[in-house]
Image 1 (cartoon, rainbow, N blue to C red):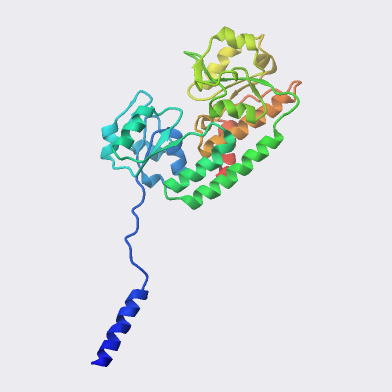
Image 2 (cartoon, rainbow, N blue to C red):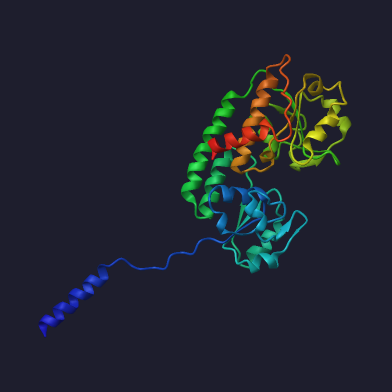
Length: 305
């Protein structure tokens, strides 16, 4: 009997020393409320964890198959709830605070994102990596992005900072101020945004006469029909940018902060502003649609991400 008791105690002690068995936490279910966040989640290798996004989330192509929960014109809270997200990525520059408040009231975890300071991009990338269960990938991507940003900052022109106008759309004529990541990118690369005195809203309408009065030395555009829109500025031959031939179509990633593609497009912008700061006859080379600009962005993107 004593032998049986000792054997039972040994079995019990062995059982108590075994590691506890717990159910693994399920992978996060992520809803993104900005196309750039959607793109970044895919870039970090967590696209399978996205269960919903917003209109205009077109990159990568797999994102086009995700359920849509809204756009800049409104959000479907009930649709978000049916997707049972464990975290919703809200855009500080675009998601209405009332939508975030309603989701939180209903028990949904919502995290604000949307860094406008370029130096904060690595931290935001790390944070997204943790939120989507890709902390390691987030840390590695953040280190590479920080290295790219530092290199671009070191090489930015200091003596002559060219005047820059960035066109978002032509009708109405929209541009960016100093309160957006796009506006801050111009300063990071050593340029002077001719509408940099406006901090809010991040993007706004301007008159053509106001652009002419500021006489930009560089005119930039991206997005739909960008090359055609720039061609319209060439009719204003008195502009410094037109006389010098410094009108540039930037890669589409320039509108996708805080994605890794944004950092790749930033390197193209910085290269062009260094050329403009050199003065003289250093015009931007003429590029065919889909030419060197996007290709360069892809190469830089591989280095950054």
